[in-house]
Length: 359
Image (cartoon, rainbow, N blue to C red):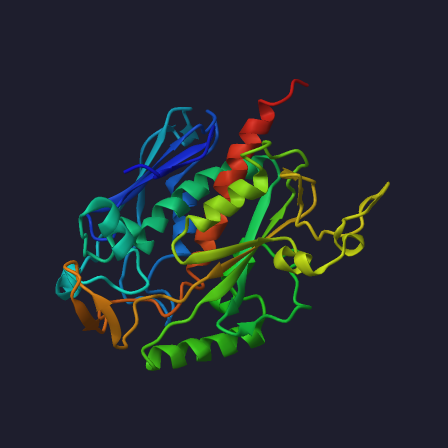
């Protein structure tokens, strides 16, 4: 299947399906001599595991990762790193009655039209389960960017119509470890409690909710980005849009810039640096050294316990109510996935920048 790889110098290929025996990633381009242990990858995987919060799927997966190649005595060898995660809690029987039915809001219709095959086992390759491999690969990328002083933070900004107050900012040096301790990865306790109640109401109604992830990149040096077709913001947006459920990516002030005048939108400078950051840390597709700010809009989970109109593979109209084990919202489990994608892109661009100029 084409389209399963991302990156130029730091290249990630994921493989596997939701209800197959395993899934994993091949990571190419990691420099030799970088310290890497399976436990470091495991810590990242723990934050997207199913079954950890009341709004999440009751599917229980430990997501135990194994490093099959590319690491020797705790250090990368420079060869491709092979990662595998076995599926342990598969219940394909939950999907048997959907064998020939197209689920509304899922990738079923597009995949069937493209390949002529209906993998009804929980979505197959298009399942959110695939993102475990992305998070594992992102942990490897995280080692590369951390060595360059780059930190990526992600948190839940909104679920449904509930959004953290504008005055709540992560300017008080929170780390990703700190954020993981907040309910729903939301760094405002009052809003987080309201979000939990909103999710409970949606579950009781058999429905689902969307939300927004905000991502901050700190310590990114100026100069990352490749003109013209591999601009840093273009690659970040593309990587984030490749995540299932993501339907919008905003960088800096995003759509609000369309309502501004140039005198408002331009990030003017003094000898001390930029006065503002409307552009979100990227100008001309190249990082400015400011904090990179991204927001990701996620649609509601399409598997809901309510009657929906659809068709089967023969084109006959059907009505279904989707059963099985499903999240109520992709938030907060999608947060570490988005963080991983940003890390992968930054690692790739960092390696490209180091080959761009002789110093």
